[in-house]
Amino acid sequence: MDEKIEQLREIVANTDNIVFFGGAGVSTESGIPDFRSEDGLYHQKFKYPPETMLSHSFYRTHTEEFFEFYRAKLLAPGIQPNKAHKKLAQWEKEGKLKAVVTQNIDGLHQMAGSKNVFELHGSVLRNTCEKCGKRFDGYEVVLNADGVPKCECGGVIKPDVVLYEEGLDQETIEKSVYYISRADVLIIGGTSLAVYPAAGLIDYFRGSKLILINKQATSRDSSADLVIHGSIGEALDACP
Image 1 (cartoon, rainbow, N blue to C red):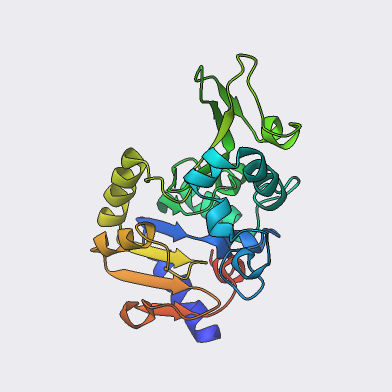
Image 2 (cartoon, one colour):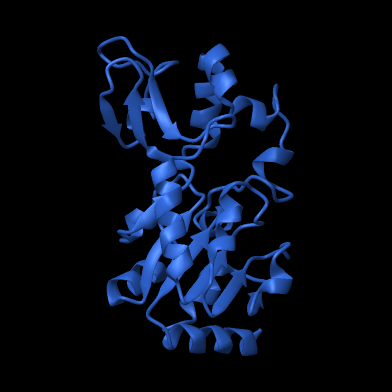
């Protein structure tokens, strides 16, 4: 492992054009449960499958139950950025990192100081009234609501997260592709690369070094220049 960390350090030291593509494993080190691991959300027992309760149709037909589940399982008050978030923000400030493309919806990258962040699946920190279009920053309006959160106009306040059956934001995809396709180094961290279409974006990478950091093996390990099976936070923090 020490040898692989040294390789990572050397690659990072010799480039100023990194893009980071991250998933749930980046945030688990801040205490946020992931979805697909043995202890993840999809292995827990609920009245309905989590995929159903996080779908657009369930949101429409079982709105109160949707928000009950959403508040309990997707909002995590008091969470803080970890070593991975902080290192990526540092690299961006130093001009080494050009963009973060994330599948996470927790806003921890921005909390750590990253500016150029593309959230493929939206964010719990943005909410919009479906009737009048008023925006609500932060998740307090949803967290503190009694039942379904409502705007003063009477409309339902919907979180700006991409539910099952909903498409990804086209502008976010296009900007993600732009940065990934122009990166010299693409670091993929904390993701099983099982969620499409998001995972398919890495196919646009044309750079020199593809690095995969994840606790478990992924389907793309064989095509990477460097694979580290371990903590994303520890690996990045070991770099300058």
